[in-house]
Amino acid sequence: MKAKTGRDRRVAAICILLGLASFLVYFQTLHYDFVAYDDDYFVYQNPVIQAGLRASGVVWSFGLHYANWHPLTWISYLLDVQLFGTTPGGFHATNVLLHAGSAVLLFLALLRMTGRMWRCAAIAAVFALHPLHVESVAWISERKDVLSTFVEMAALLLYVRYAERATLKRYLWMLLAFVLSLMAKPMAVTFPVILLLLDYWPLRRRAFAEKVPLFAASLAASILTVLAQQAYGTVATLESIPLSTRIANAAVAYVVYLKQTFWPANLAVLYPTTAPAPGAGTMAVLLLAAITAVVVLQIRRRPYLFTGWFWYLGMLVPVIGLVQVGAQSRADRYMYLPLVGLALAIVWLAADFVERHPVMVRPGAALTCAVLLVFAAVSWQQTKYWKDSRTLFEHAIAITDRNFIMRNNLGVVLSRAGDLRGAMFQYAQAIAINPDYAEAQANFGNALLRAGMPDAARPMLEKAVQLKPDFPMAQLDFGIVQVSAGNYREAIAHLSEALRLTPEDPEVHSNLCYALEHVGRLDEAAVQCREALRLRPDYPDAQFNLRNVLAAQSRPGSSAHESRQ
Image 1: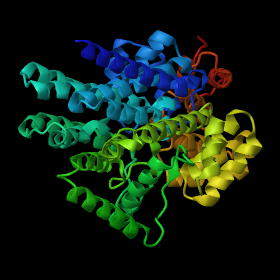
Image 2: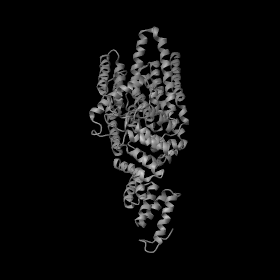
Image 3: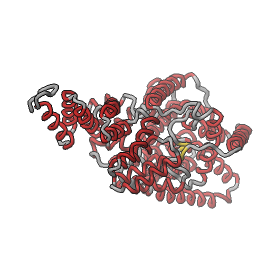
Image 4: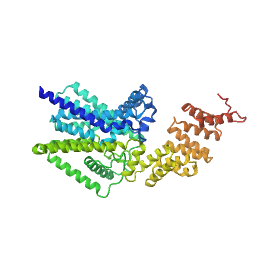
């Protein structure tokens, strides 16, 4: 009884230490701002989220939004607003708590499967402290990572409980947790495969049939995700990125992730997609094949290598680039759970070596503590880059090549701060790298408009509209340029398209009102001005335009007559 009590106390102490270590690395984020990279769409400029936890917001959460289907993540944002308000500190605190909770649940699940307390503690500590996880924890928009993983780790613990005594009730609890993890982020679709690997080792059981409902849930989540990404236009075609290039990129990414696991340096929020160097893909494939061969040959003596390695390979499949989504070649956040497989294989291999050589126990423990301290220190520093948008984007530009997306984003931040000269420099750099990047063309045109240079803005906005006709800001600004040139009918066409894309934008309504007035369509113009004022009652441009429209209508010979209301 005493021995059991002592073990329980050690387990509790490890859980507390995992939570404390996570908090010490990430508590600085509680004072950080939102970043202008998805946080705007996801939180601080999202009117549904800003309204807090309402029934209409919960219903909205189950739709397809911004190339994602993750209703549980949206609901968690709604709850944050309800509990903490709209400031970023509460959102960051939730991310940190979920990350710490995942580390604890991972430790408990591994311990229950293997009974090896210190090995499991080391794996969970790597998860809690590794610098590759900073992006998932410090980025509010990556709530889906930390939330999905927290629920998935709960599902893993429930699965171990079910494996000990298979009952329908235990299975349904595990299935519910898994479905919830899918509703937070569909990357959890690989969970059934992970369970099959754990069935082989360390659980030593064969039970494929019970995984069928899990695979069915994964398939449903995958279909919803593909529909969301296609609707948002984020899936690259085979014409733009051929299959051979994707395979090469995927193999190189696997190797780079391996390197970053051991040497987590030069981490950035975005690594632009680039063609691998000649022969790099082939070399990467050969290296991965060699490691896989060794793992398979060792499957009887060291089965944990098989489970850990294929955990790593399998969990990355949805995001490794075979289906290219977005402009990134890889992302630190994609390693949030796959890293656990590598940690499991490495820790178990090292621990087996130490057990065979007892003289290495103390040096091994010291080395483990040193590695964890280094990880914590690097994570602490990496987290600092997330304090605000400018710091984050400048860091990414400094350590990556030809990062036109980050230069464009930095330009937006500088523009909002009133530094138009600095913003235009960044836009110009982005366009020099990628002339077909519509966002930079449109943003440069917008900056020139704000600087009072519509003629200089015209070619850039025209190209932006050609490159991306469904880009509302480009359509709006090009319409404004046409108005400034007196081309009111052309302006109406572009402003109408902007209105179709963003029907709730008062600026679009107001400018369309102005253009319609100048071609004599006064009734339509009044409707647009009134709609602009409904959306923004204190909008001075719309008020001015409406007064002009009403004055024109009151003149004899106008197409319609309206009295002021």
